[in-house]
Length: 158
Image 1 (cartoon, rainbow, N blue to C red):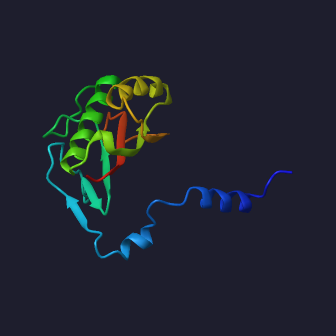
Image 2 (cartoon, helix red, strand yellow):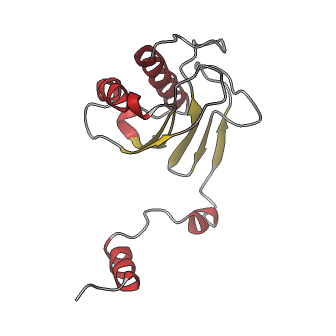
Image 3 (cartoon, rainbow, N blue to C red):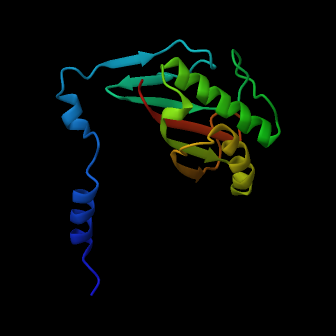
């Protein structure tokens, strides 16, 4: 007989509890919040931080495939944009004191599902060992005209 959803969730929670519960982390006086504002990657386009370090985690905002120091896309070609996006993501992660080897989760936003295979080819050259968890979402458009891909991530702090 199939088990109920409630039983499954209770057992799954017992088998794999959350590593860090946000409410519990907020109550810890040693948990520090550090906002990373100045980084090598292009500046924020709007009122948000490039990355935030909280406790043992680094939350990196979404990045596009723009040339560092500009708001111009590196290329109109998808793979070149994807490569630059991941370079910008790496710069943000490193500016926060972490590294791609410590990335736990990535989220990829594509404007065309047909670019999924090409994204995987480029992505696999950046993450070669210990692949992080990843979600890919297809969206209608991104905030910069002509942008075809965006990445954000969560990494372990050093």
